[in-house]
Image (cartoon, rainbow, N blue to C red; front, side):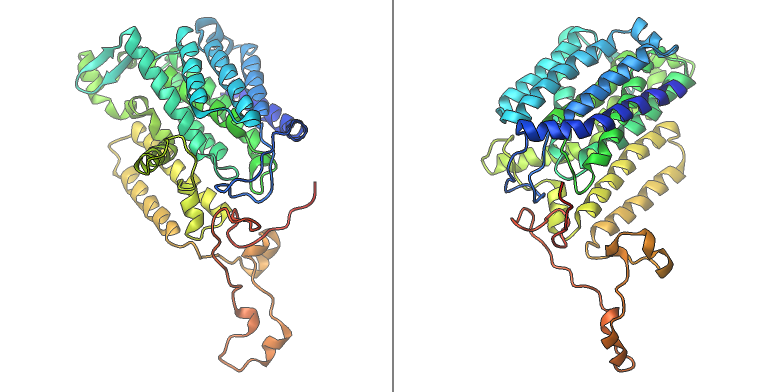
Length: 436
């Protein structure tokens, strides 16, 4: 665990330290497009944040290769090199898109080629544990097609959700954390070395996101762009593919009997393996809804619009920060709910806890105008919007029983997403930003 944490910290540190210079480079290179109608930020912001994330990935792999225990991952498996090859290709395509806005079909082809490069180097799905059937071995073509499909879907799901400051990196970090705990449990508790690459990939992915988040939180100083969103999507998919295609369920020997009985009785353990998209359920749902919505309108599935889930949260009155936190909440609930169920599916407390937290999440969705106010003693530690308004002198002249001016809440006006001249990201009005 210490070596995984060291790899995570080195990846996060390199990503964090490089993001500032990369931002200056993006401004000089002109990778700072004008605001579009579907955007929610009000000032042109540089892209190419994926450059720092890619070098963070390289640093994490380099450090892991020189650690005593993690070095065995590179000696016994070619998957880290396969990941680096596919990541380099998809990152290059993303950098070109951030600068020159390449066609969507070209990007799709590049995603498929990057997935094919990983398959050629051994990072592929070999079999699937099917409940009631047992291990189903896949042919080379079946494994290749399934691997490519999973990579493309995951990359585009993450890319589609990258619409608010800190949203994509935070959601992927949550998913990577849940996946890391799951893969580490299989690797450490059951002694299955085939789960070590997926554990390493998840730790590095957490470091990439954590190192970039401080620069990307609202108001963002830099965007990751397609060079970053496609990169972290590919790394996330690589971890799911590695643990799904390489871990033999019969090796765990949780139950005696035939292989078919073993797989059938350990279904909860393999839920994240059979359904790796559960850790990115929110981006995947957004992706499916976007395709259906655009196809129904007669548009291309790759045509950009303002109908994503985060756009809808802003339109109903949520602020930028609250919309991001709500998306974080649902991502964590789904990811860690699946993780808890895989550990102990017989516990009714897990089900009740998920139901209770889901009710809280629905309540937050229905209260876009609720702004909590901190107590007087804590006002110095919270943002101004959570502080109570000071009582004006004229309030003293108010008649008894009637509220004074100082007791009234500041009116909040709904803001339409993407309106020029208004900070649609905050949904409560313009916010000053220090000149840089």
